[in-house]
Amino acid sequence: MKVLVINAGSSSLKYQLIDMTDESVLAKGNCERIGTDGSFIGFKTNDGQKIERKTEMKNHTQAFRAVKEALLDKEYGAITDLSEVTAIGHRIVQGGAYFDRSVLIDADVHAKIEELSPLAPLHNPAHLQGIDACTEVFGTEIPQVAVFDTAFHQTMPEKAYMYAVPYEYYEKYGVRKYGFHGTSHRYVSAKMAELLGRPIEETKIITCHIGNGSSITAVDGGKVIDTTMGLTPLGGFMMGTRSGSLDPSVVTFIGEKEGMTMAEASEMLNKKSGLLGVSGVSSDDRDVTAAEKEGNHRAKLAHEMLYYQIAQYIGSYYVALGGCDAIVFTAGLGENQPCLREGVCNYLECLGVKLDKEANNNTIHGRQGTLTAPDSKIRVELIATDEEMVIARDTRDIVAAL
Image (cartoon, rainbow, N blue to C red; front, side, top):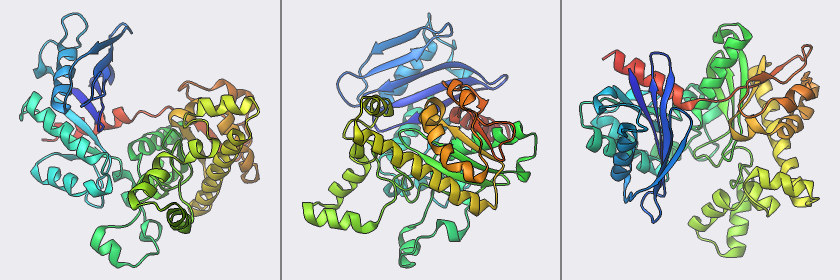
């Protein structure tokens, strides 16, 4: 079985073709600037070459045609006929309370993803465009599967996912915590259980997906009991451009002082805050790190705030879990910034975490490795996430059962 994994954004489309016989990646690439001038597709060949082609992509249907041409390319292609693609798996950000697992896409699923668009206005509409474009380009006979970011978090108890606002807003609009990055948290928590050599049902794991968007999840026996992101990806701790959770009166106070509309306040919190807002340098941690090394106080402050907030959530989840067997770092910053992991782990010494600084500094670029000393009470691990593989495996299992 060959599964095409799709992650469609509002102006981008990432894809991987995975042979599920041995879980090898046959092709991968991305379409950028869909709907604007200068659109292009970039992809890697089997021998590692990087190819970039400018091509007109006014919409996602044209983007999928570009993907099809790349897959079938006589010189660089991974397949000779579209019939080799057995199924298509889509990453869907918001599944609300409807979906606690991956599902085969039909008219009802399509309608529910659309219904949930107000909860993920930048993502769900783009995913629907991706699904529709797939149907148009690949036909109706190839089954398509939806894999939801929110599904893994549906085991949270009410006390964790409810907000202390009038209950009617939950009943009327579904206002509650949903959580995101579920496929990543699911993948690395399962991998951590394997590394511990124990059934996941017997483990307590805290997973830290730290990137430009970030979240931390408490996983008890393979089930989520709490996570940092909330109704939207804005909740939790500070990120590249997002503020994370804060006193709600901060929003109303600034809004009144600046005469902001709701939309302008949302843009400020989502796109102008976080590392960018505090440092004044960039949302890219590499730039903030460089500025800190040059003595920039605000860049240093941004990092101090970030490390402190991550440690706070880990500490609270240690309590929620009633102990912890392992802490996992993953995603862009989690996998590639030893200084971040050290800064966080320094706060965790009171919990018995004993960082091996040499191991921590040498474990980067997605290399899996244990970051703590043998006598550390809690094992800290770096595990490179693989959300595409989770999507591919779910797609395989659902289609195989048809």
